[in-house]
Image 1 (cartoon, rainbow, N blue to C red):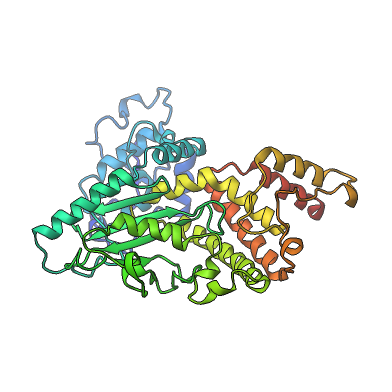
Image 2 (tube, rainbow, N blue to C red):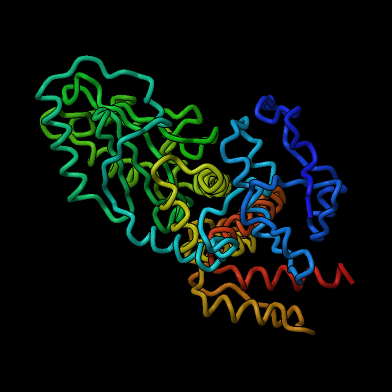
Length: 432
């Protein structure tokens, strides 16, 4: 029995296809091929192809093997010079990477386990080769000497041995002048559980002059010292006036000191008072109210920064971003809910057991207003505690951010079952 492959005659110029053309069977051919019905006028295989079909066995029972047929067709086209992309568009020209086939696809649980393992073994300090997305990648450092190299190696050693647990650093082997750091926002501040990335460059004059530091703001100014353009305003960096030990000292100041100063002095409990001159208002009621309002905005910006990092993680920190938010996603969502209920941003969020009890009580059928959960003594209600009435936009904005964070955290495998269950319960009456 002879089978003809449409378009396989010597007149067809398959090898001369342009990149925009694709080698595809017609709809009827695909249907016949998928069903295993090979029509005499549609498919043709030369007699010289041994092992495909045996003419002497026409009377014998033959079971069509589609996978074997695909392989035979693939073998026929191995030597053709097809344009890029054509191979991908024609299923029977594709060869399986391994014998496992669909078994190569990883399940969600396997992906989550992989994220957890990479995060667990993510080093606090490490060297990398390429830093193509670094802010100063296209800014040559200029001519340097041995003293410059020795001093940077000294800084590397300090960072490797003395970094706080909440700061991670990567330095470049090929570009010793480049460094990238990320710090986790401290607890008890509007920055808690956020990831904040900084790119630094050691100038040719280092250590006579301080390093140059750029903050990955995403266009958001969430601190008086961290500008939307990426500028980091700090006396130690020479970007703000300072006195004595506040200024850079070529003999004693280090990159480690810079990073710790940013985390401790900039990402603090009430960043509003970082603004020069505003510290004088720290002891009056008006200043405290303004500081709390500033914290509300800061936390919203911090949540947006989380989304920015999740969707476009900086180079060499992809595993840290995925693992961190997988681990802290539940706590971040709980904080969002807690602040939306009227509690002060940065205040202590009840632990998981207390949260579960409150949710059960709040969602219990037939619960009256008198049985509603009330804030504990150690919780500070923003409106009652500071005389501040939040604008409605805070809750509206936080609800949007919450939904976006919930979706992103789910992708990373965070424990969000509780929040998904509440969302589903709320949507059921509307669907009904």
